[in-house]
Image 1 (tube, rainbow, N blue to C red):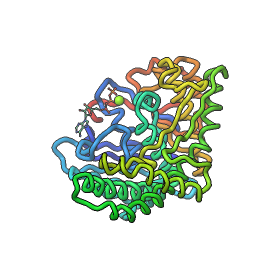
Image 2 (cartoon, protein in one colour; image 1 turned 60 degrees about the vertical axis):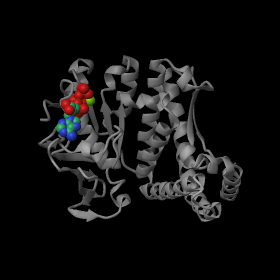
Image 3 (cartoon, protein in one colour; image 1 turned 30 degrees about the vertical axis):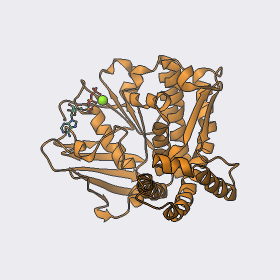
Image 4 (cartoon, rainbow, N blue to C red; image 1 turned 180 degrees about the vertical axis):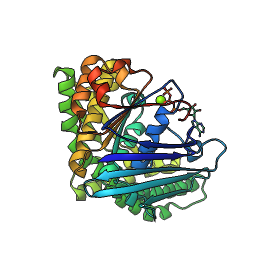
Length: 365
Ligand code: ATP
Ligand code: MG
């Protein structure tokens, strides 16, 4: 797929900016705090309706404005689509395809696909399980847009069940009322677990291959889904295991006033030579791991969706050594439209520069 144009209105530090992408590679160059990452973030929002920066919609709208709009024209094998996302300070959003408003998120997701890779992604290795869950969920949303709906349903059940547990904790509710929420937690939770497990099963071997080729085959990367509810994977087993675990933790849950069982407590384990990557890796090794994960994401989306996603590289090239840079550039070639931010062009080789559209970003222009 190919992003032809992008139009930002009152988004972050942009007042009004129209961009036409004239080459498969675009380099956004500029000093710090000029708007390079903001532009990538706008593309990411169109792809996932999420931003990897922890942020509220009110922060996305340009200071002093109430409303912000991101629009784009995207070319896919199936034709050309106009996408737009309106963000409001009050958090209400409107999405549209070809100028027609779309009611359900899942009908908007999956039109534009993008893989974002920034220095923040090192948190995938270093951060807590929630960061890896968010990463996996964001990938799944692109692989199967219906997952956005499934996740929303699970989170809703979880919120309501937690509210009831809080009431029970303060002797304001009855534990019999839990029965109906337990059933809903299990049925919504199973749908999440199955999809996560399937995605990791597809991703793990691809990531391991990339890791092997980048690191020179001395290190073995394992990506493993470690669900909070453990089974040997058949659906009947999963249901039974889930129900049993809820029963086992019932007293603890009512005591703590929160749900202790379910996919909101899942982990994605990353190990190198069977040692947790967080403990094992040097900074460079952790970068290699994240690079392997990102390349695997690209390939997985390409295979499942049937078109090549965009690649958004935010400040990462300069952080990779020459060997890893080349691995990345070789993998991209001309297959993936790529938007790259940098503070200086010095880290790019001449060939790469010649093939790229170069945009200078300064003060939101
Ligand atoms: P760096 O090289 O440091 O990564 P960058 O060019 O990627 O810089 P961005 O993160 O894109 O920088 O832009 C940051 C700028 O955008 C900051 O000056 C910030 O104050 C401004 N900014 C962020 N949100 C808003 C907003 N809602 N309204 C106005 N300006 C904003
Ligand atoms: Mg930046």
